[in-house]
Length: 410
Image (cartoon, rainbow, N blue to C red; front, side, top):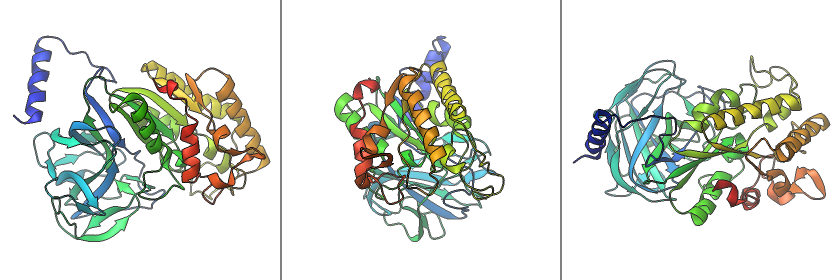
């Protein structure tokens, strides 16, 4: 019997028995997101993209493994209906190629494709598929009609592929027209990991997004944390990345501001037990830029430490309302970057003092202490910075993850 039919019958039995009670976390659901990415409005980092009569093949790196899979497609910032002509998932071989015999067609509400209204997301039907932990999947979306400006994640730190015209969903060797460094429309891949599975969400900006790490190497700090989590707690704990490069707590610039997107991006996934927040350095740094530098209408007015702290208190309140533990991470050094100045450094230190000492977060990860130069605490260690003095190198991300007390994530 098809796995979707099995789930439907179980659902009906429970519903008729009056045994269904729904919550945001779907308590003890066997599903967890093994990979996610935070979707932004069209444009921004990565530039505007539109697609018509092409197949997008996007590479995702799993955290938890499972026995079944479903994907989430987002049109949350779409300006028009998104016509999805079909979708498939397979194990990546190399580049745009997939492993022979590994491709599975995906359906949506029992159909090969679906039309996604503006503002909506859709889930595919579950498909039985052994999904290994820490492997690369290729998710292909066929877009037969003009999409208009695409929902995107601008800095994927991953090479993705746009085909030559046509539906090439199951092709082992994709006829590639060009490569892109962003992702589009695909917002999550969930796996059925079994009872007791749970999710840890990393929520932040470009440092969580992995800027400065090696492309296609899965060396972002949430990727590295996922490996530590698997060794510590076993394979039923997913770690997913909801960082957006350029993101801020208080104002829009790249993606919605953190307060606006927190519930959707951090709390809406199945079985979230912990959220780690690393956000605020762009609120500080971008305030040093002249008006208009980041685009028309983007607010670059000065911010105060208490305003950033008030935003973090919103994250805490929203997480606690859902019964989710929330951990604050201190803001890493940025002296030497083009947006740094003495006023901003004073704000960073005040915010970090509050994160460390207020007791309002359920726990603290001191990324600042892990990454800073002991001889010059306002700067990253030279070997921990990737060249711009704000984004860590691979070694810097490794040092950050080594500093995490795994007891915080029990």
